[in-house]
Amino acid sequence: MKNEIEFVGAKDGKIVFYDKMDEEFSSNNPYKLARYMQTHNWDGRYLASSSLHFASEYGFERNEGAEDLLKKATKIFKTL
Image (cartoon, rainbow, N blue to C red):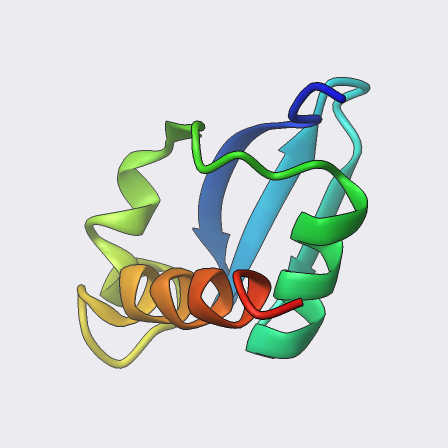
């Protein structure tokens, strides 16, 4: 099956996934993000919003916060 997650961003201290239907899912829980990745055929390829790189402007404590959360969710996803 094809990856259904097209775009990843950060908003309000959460990772936001946008799918092919322009619907969004957001969470700051890495387990919920990993489960969403699983149910939407995540293959690790995505377009990234600049909000991932400037996450402190989008509710994270540090600019690296969103990328760190995404990495943590990806690590969990690989174990599912």
